[in-house]
Structure formats: structure tokens, C-alpha cells
Image (cartoon, rainbow, N blue to C red; front, side, top):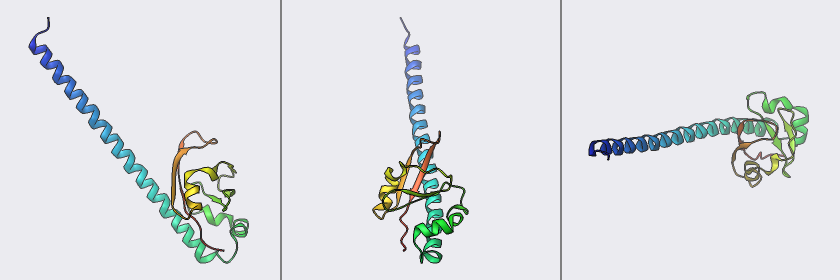
Length: 141
């Protein structure tokens, strides 16, 4: 037989434990979402800067010609991996030198092909860690 004191202590400990676990889950989720949003905003700002540079100084030639002639211009200013994908979803240039046939099928690229900002978080077959990708369409020649 258990005493009332013991049952009360166990019930309060259970309630405290459940409360702490729920609070931790909310805290972890909030920090994760905040981190991902900040990372997305940083990538989007770098991408918009690169697109503005392209539209201002390089849009007189086709994208393929610019990639061949000025390949360093597109990724030299950022430490992130940069891919340039044509309207059919094929990779024209990748700053890591990896030509990924699957990159055109991700949600960010599909949104960019529709003329919108796209964001994708997932894994790549040539990397072990998860990545975040942000894609914008380039308007030009």
C-alpha cells in the first residue's frame, strides 16, 4: 500500500516532468524556426545582391555566355554553393563543380521556374549534411 504523501509527490513529479518536456519542445522548435528563417533571409539577400549585379552589368549577353566568360563573378562573393540552372531545370554551373541532374526537381527550383522565390531544405546525394537552398529567377537576356 502506498501512502497519500507518496502518491501526491509522484503525481506532482509527473506533472513537473511533463511540463518541462513540453516547454523544451516549444523552445527547441522556436529556436530551430528562428535559425532557419535567419539563414533563409541571409541566403535570399545574398542571392538578390548577385541577381542585381547580373541584371545591371551582365544582362546584355545570354546567361550561358556569361557563365562561360564570367564564371567567378557568380559565386566569388559568397561562401555558399551557387548553382545556375536554365529554364529546363538543367544545371549550367555549380560552384563546387558538381553537376547534379536532380537539382532541377527540387521545390526551390520549381518555384523559381514559375517566377517566385523558392526555399528547400533537405539532403543531397553528394553531401552528408542537410542543406538549405534558396532560388530566384534571373530576368535578363
